[in-house]
Image (tube, rainbow, N blue to C red):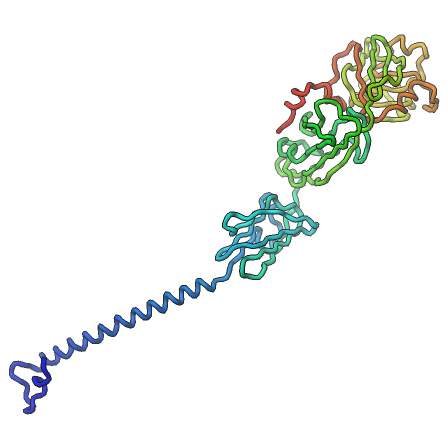
Length: 412
């Protein structure tokens, strides 16, 4: 279309052009121009938005999250502590309790998650410090709840004590244990010099540990209790976390032959002494088997009513009494029987008696001498008594079980 056709000097439009046609043509040109301008503006806007998005992503800060959450007052102590980060990586995490303990842990491969290796302890306030790359350290705190019911294990022998080679490590729990495996895993007994030590359950409240044979003289034994927050049964948790050390002294093995009515004592394999004795009568035979001295009394009262024998005897000052069974078997001094009884007759109610004097202060008599030579954990073997072998749970007498039977009593 030429301008000359529009600019008519006469001012009259050519016949072939109408006003509507001119306006239509102008509108078409105008529309084309406007369309071109709109497309360029949209491209510029999209580019600006993309740049802004990239910039926003580039400037995001790492966000750290801690479980249990900051300020929690009664957090569970049955799950580990977790720290996670988004838009970043973790560089350091520390978890410290108000008791001075720390929880160790590890990162995942991407270093976006840290998990404690153990659960937090109950009734403890923890501070968590978490550091993400390129960001300031974040500190949070939480407090774990206390358990409702608890249990402890009372142990034998005493801490820092020295015992004979037959002394097992024995634990008696204040609540019956349902999850024996969990509790046994939390208790370890190690020896120096090293030897395999295995646990054996006697019922649901007692766990003993021993090696295959008697401890070597001079052994150092360490009992490690890690029972704190271990669930022994539903809702009942342990509270102990400690190490206890015991020592083994010299070896003393005593053999009581009630057919010969004589007792021989060996110290570190060599003969030490021999004494005439009197054991249980035919009506009250003495248990046979391997027994361990578990209690010692220079003088003690013995009443027949306490062992189911009515009012047959009540002696207030039995000298040099050493317990062999929970049920009441002792090896003790005897001042009320004639001297001729010892070595010739078995006349007792089940105990092993040695000649002694009233008052327990005569160093010349057998009862005194044997008592002074003995210690807790010494082994006393009774044979030819006419009675069956003592129940291994009756006292500290697990040595009457074979090693295979002992190991079968472990929950692990």
